[in-house]
Image 1 (cartoon, one colour):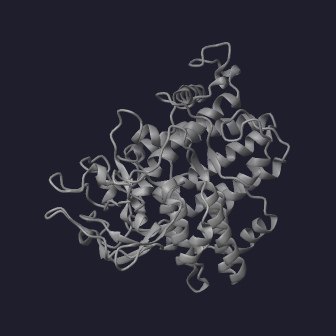
Image 2 (tube, helix red, strand yellow):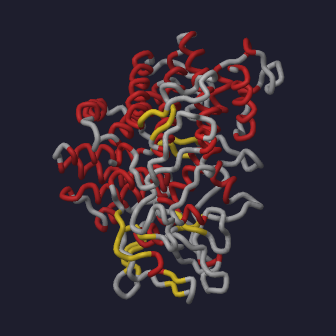
Image 3 (cartoon, one colour):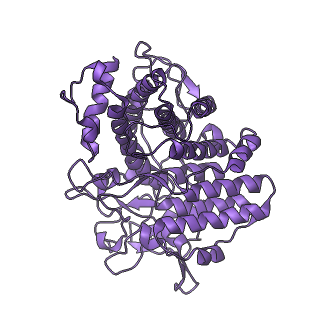
Length: 499
């Protein structure tokens, strides 16, 4: 079984990665013997599976469900997402990719590196394991963990999300106890040629994210306080970059899916994010425009920013055609962001807000904005802070809206997670059918309030107007052959950290 899984990982790695020096071995890369397998052969392929799932499917769905994206004129590929709908089949391929092509093979890397006492590699593999489980729990709420990855157990028990979170956090602590900043790490795309020092920082950032995500259901104050006091977090965004090429199968995943030559266009900017980053006065004139808007979205054919509406792809006989809508900025070498400096600073701001240190919360809030502007390659954080200042009396709103904006251009899936957890941006009183009517082709967003969500046109009935899709249904690829799979609790039942 292990050998089959190794071959699967290697074969897939060639498809996504432009850098394939790790396949320079004497035997065919499609059939290496077990004794010739090395962790450096497996890790890049594992990374590309994670990049493909997290940077494509989860970015797309998270973008729709947090109203960063809406749907392109005249196409229907993701119209269900635009209406806050997810089926048990739609996410099955991504679930399988995480489980079989990432987590199974990470287990092998961890076993091999522990046996050889290669603690830097062991830490890197543990981080990816924790990262993958975090993403899966944030989608489904419950998944197999304690009985998972056993090829002889075809019906593993589904564990509660908090059990999984706490389990992988303990695994991270155990891996960190073995590694030092000088520990070496096998061939990889994330930090090529680097020692474990950067990985330790990544581990700390991931721990901070997961601990703060549990903050409303468990007292994590001391654990978070210790991390912040240590202050050993990434000094630059953690992302897969410099490993893509402008060739078929070598492009960054989101670009390959929605922007590459010959691919159908689906993604456009949502009115919610456009109307928040471009604030209009009562006469419809631009009062404030966030400089990051140009880094996140293209203008339309008239050189303007125009937001689509969730739940529609517009009438084919109307005036809202393809050229009216703004597409996300994308390129073949666009990074896949795993965690950003801005996100870390917003999490620190939240910690200080929760511990009644308003001055430090405001300081980190400002630092988060500055980091986000730096990532976007623009200036103007002070102007943003003047329009969206930190309000300690309603810190969840301040941080929630600002983080949603920052993540719109880097990590819409994490934006979706934080909207569900912090409950901001919240739903306003206006609804999608007030912004646009298919029947009379009337488009009028004057009632939109910046920093709010709205009910999609023809919202998925099992979610309902004014509510978020809180979780994905358990994937059919798991439940169809697992007699221990639980009953789906419903689309509006929060993940454990959102209760």
